[in-house]
Image 1 (spheres, rainbow, N blue to C red):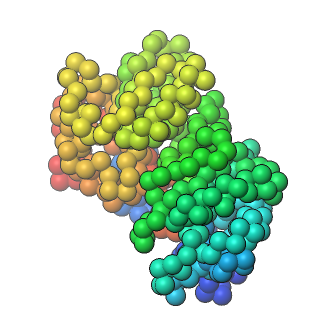
Image 2: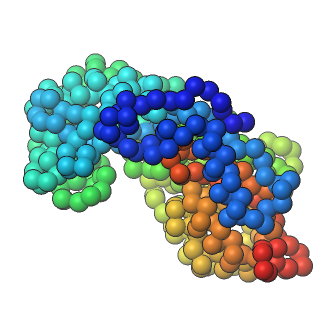
Amino acid sequence: MVPEGKPLRCGYFEAGACRSCTLIETPYAEQLRAKERRCRELLAAVPDAGWLPAFSGGDRDFRNKAKLVVGGRAGDVALGILGPDGRGVDLRRCAIQEPAIRAAIPDLATFLNATGLPPYDVPARRGELKFVHVTAAPGGALMLRFVVRTEEGLGRIRARVARLRELVPRAAVISVNLLPEHKAVLEGEREEMLLGSSLTMGMGDVSLHLRPQSFFQTNTAVARELYAQAAAWAAECRPASLWDLYCGVGGFALRLAGALQGSGAGPVEVLGVELSAAAVRSARRSAEEAGIAATFEAGDATAFALDAAPEDLPELVVVNPPRRGIGPELAGWLEEAGGVRHVIYSSCNPESLARDLEAMPSLRLRQARVFDMFPHTGHLEVAVLLERDPSGASTRPGG
């Protein structure tokens, strides 16, 4: 369904302070139609009957993670984005953030002001406070991550954790990340935990455990529907085995495993592969708590697939790669892996998806659906269900 509500107006955009939501002045229904049109053009091989209605969770209060640049000066910080002059722009009333995040930002500013730590000055390459990352769980619990340059910054925040918990009582996880280098990145490798270890993201029948450096979709309502759609497709395919490559904290694998193993269709072997060992630990914990039989391994998804013996191949493969797509090696493997009867491919970049599909002509495009994970921007998520053509004939244009 395409929302037709009142247009979202943003004072930051109108004042030129923030232009991140590049399409915010375009009516939202028109934004969504344009995204669908773009995907239909790129994935022309999907039959008209195969396009399911696009899903949107709304055009405001949707972003579950804020990556806030710390600007201003010691004792008077700004929390928002980096401006064109290389200094921070305060955006504490941003309307696309979840309400729990917006409510916490003024208290986070109060806390940081009390530390006396100076914000990092990008042009001058000096200062201490770089970012605050805030993630909200569905129930309102928060993960707070402070990115600083030195042990001094870590020490001052550590010494004031009790005060921080008074100011932000919904904080379930607090950590400090050290990024001493002068780099245009959001975090460093070292993470010091000050409270808790993971944020619980309730996703229906499964609770996922999100650690500070784990990936999770930025729009919880849309992520729920994306997992539900993949589970519905899997139920139609009725595989006896599935692999979730690029599984992260196990969202797809656990949601599909729960649906399949609870359907009475018989035992289903489920395996997730993810490069991050921390994410794998989270997925294993979620599986144990939910009573779901699933195995998770840390490793490179492409290397894992290429090394697999033919007799070990699953009937269904789920892939949810980064923007670059799965690439020619994994796409070529899927094309040749005749035992893989179905593929569910969730993509945040329809151009790389279309490119990967060109390398897999034996896999027919059966259904597709657009998920508006990122309103007011040109970004989107699109998921497709692929089915192997037993004849091996191509269904792509010109194939």
